[in-house]
Image (cartoon, rainbow over all chains, first blue to last red; front, side):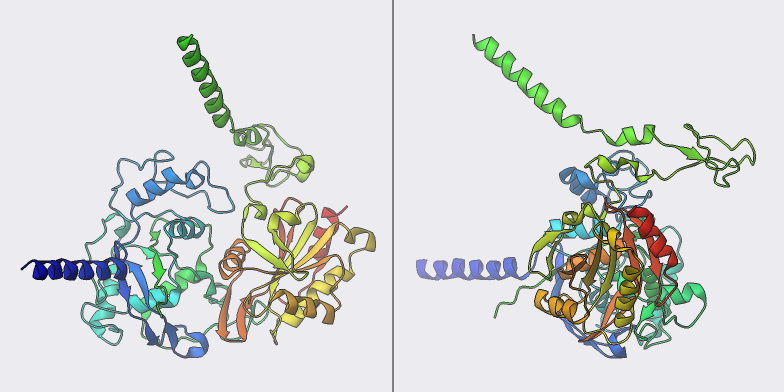
Length: 260
Length: 238
């Protein structure tokens, strides 16, 4: 009798332990794979390793905690190298949101530098474009829903809705991986957003400018029907790291340490 | 006696705390702001307060503070010396960008296995250097930063420097971390992307910083007329 109880406890402990180690709080595991992104390297598949991703974008109240702990990211302290004048304009003070803003809305008006440091201070990092797009191509039931017409239609309908940044997190259903709000809430910073080399050309109305960009692989989209992804890449291409925008937030990811 | 002790320690604490709060040097620079008509109707005339130009009625614009404050040691907000990333030089030293303080910096991001644009970018750098009088070179540092930190080790950068006759005092090559390089590229608003294991796409930008690490001029494109860049450098090293 005692023996079986001890065994039961041991069993519970074992299960609990694997749960503890398998996932960080508020994150889900993403099983990596190879896939063909809209703008790939040489227009070929890219490999995404296993990683963990935040279930929700970082919220206003989470960012409040962050700036209280790291005063250099409070809006009166942040230096102009790292953020433009719009940084946290919807806050009434260094550590407080305006009353009109919801603590549970995604934090926006943050620069890339601030987002990057936020993630690093939690032992995480920003996702790469390839990682973000990999998770974002899933719908509720499949890992890659890009070929479904309703997947694109739904995302574009979300993109058309105005002022979605004022909504709170979690209103959109989770996708295959258990991640919420990749579409339809706010745009999100990525670690290597400045690897999109289409901005110069698209602004100057020429196909490509060989003098500005070395290598001609800048325009090499693979799926001309994926308008939603086009919009995301175009926005990434137009960003600068110190920009703070009303509808641009972020979430973090974490590498899974190699166990073997 | 006990009371005295408490009073004394409270006093010490107040002093300590007020000392912490007194770092508000930021506002003083605003007080010294200088305004000027954007059309320069009255030439270089400046005003100490904001308002409108008496001639064209346009709003006066604050003048970018001239680099008169060279003597002060403080790093301004816009200075790249605020970055704390670590870099290896081609000589095997570990530095931070602020260790480059005191010289006018001409910076470009390259990678040594680049076959297309990089030799031209490097050539552009050498053309700029060739137009600078010898006596100005001691105040200058031409910095080439690798966007391929995995391949471009200090040894490889050193070999590249020797091969391209860029091994003199005024040339510096830097290898960073992937995150440090990404961050610095973002400071320069430079874009790059690895398109194959040995090749990158990247924008071609040569940037000039003053001795305090503030961005003064950027030249975009390959083989473009470098007169503006050279003029900026000459102005900064006078």
